[in-house]
Length: 327
Length: 110
Image 1 (cartoon, each protein chain N blue to C red):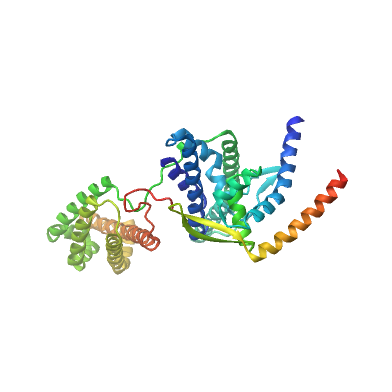
Image 2 (image 1 turned 90 degrees about the horizontal axis):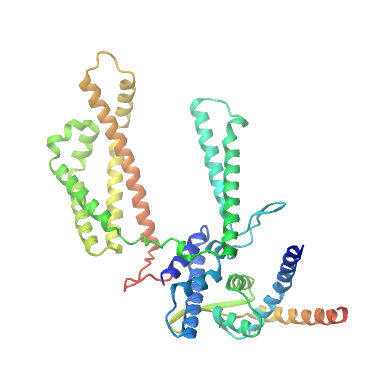
């Protein structure tokens, strides 16, 4: 059922911006209909279907983008003499265009304010470029989908669904190696910590024990993940809590040293000739460490948010037998 | 020109079928069915309808209150069963009356 899984996944992906419950409902019904179709054909030929026969049934159902588009409420289209972007792709087009155009306009406005320049219509020309680029891209996509829908497309070319609850073993090995390295460094911290400047010293001394415990917990969960490479609710919750804790510790440290690092930045940007090289290097190390902690905090919070979403939506693609489920 | 005529015919045929399909689906759902059996039943009666048209149509009719649906297990799988609602019965009755009237007029015209 590999082709069927790919097909259903592609339809699900194409139904973006649709409420999750409605999406689940549609996919469940589509899955049942296709499975019934497969079974009927199987009974007719008296043997399991070949990949080619499965492919023919899926092709008859239509290209995933067109199938998903038919379930959307009528939302118009873009025509100029003839229809250039059909109703199937139009919701996606309008979303991408609105997102890109507003983001471009926002960035231009921030840059204008930062540079103290006046607002003018000419400054917003890139928004017009976005309109042209996005519209052209969707016109080409629409034409190619329609051509593929009519001339035959293959479900074999669709991407395999990726289970977000599956843990990559390669990633785990890298993670375990990284954790062992970090624990090794962390345990020997008092010896080397002072080189890294005040931000790092503060971070390491304030959170030394708490983070050491978290590292060890993460190491244990990583070893369990090697044996059971699918997230359980408990392990995912532990990972989410650990990422939140890391992010919070880093944010608190960065905020506590922000003014000091800012002053250091101003002083070192155009250094006084009397400033020694040691002061210069250690200053830049401190700034770099602070910036790295700030970036790492954002990454940790982003990761924690992703894990929280997975926990709330809890919908593994595999059933107890390790098989991909239809929805 | 021949290709243009074929395309025009396809468009007109599509328009003609659209209303008929709604009536056929509503009529077939006087008794409860799920999507696959409904499509088969219509096809057996000579009215082919592809899945890409049928399922969105069922959803639209349900959102208009003409159909009601329910997920239930059958043949070891969850299936969505549809049937005509009381509003649907009323509308179908009116549609059939209108259909008969148009049909009678058309018989006289063509």
